[in-house]
Length: 150
Image 1 (cartoon, one colour):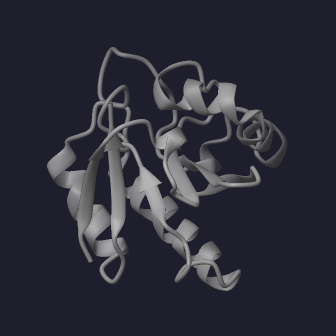
Image 2 (cartoon, one colour; image 1 turned 120 degrees about the horizontal axis):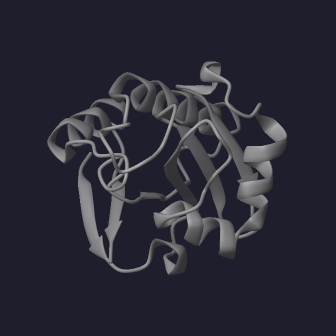
Image 3 (cartoon, one colour; image 1 turned 30 degrees about the vertical axis):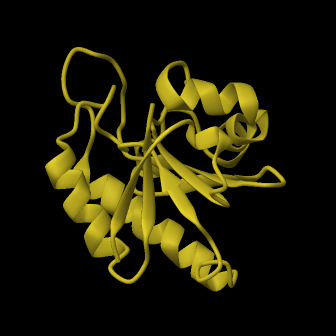
């Protein structure tokens, strides 16, 4: 397994699975989440319909949307949002990635999926990429993962 870094727009990529970090308040109001909300409104609707607003039990879980050419996972990695402090919860991110992997395996999509993500949890959520990278390497020890940045 390796993390493959790509400079470019993940939404224009050939990744069949895109995952990104979300809070528990149905916002998707900035960063990659806003771009996903605009291009794939089904992902935002999944967030609103499959989960309860403000429910802390969402942490470590996901909602997902089949958007035709892409399967998008909204990973609940933080309770609140804002630029005032680090909001990323590493354990919630790891649990959500494990849950996503399991969902892909159960649905026989894991081996055939090309998984892409931004530097998840490390921009607006304030996480440390060195810590997040270790989580990704642990969860996807046998699979390449593509990490996009503009």
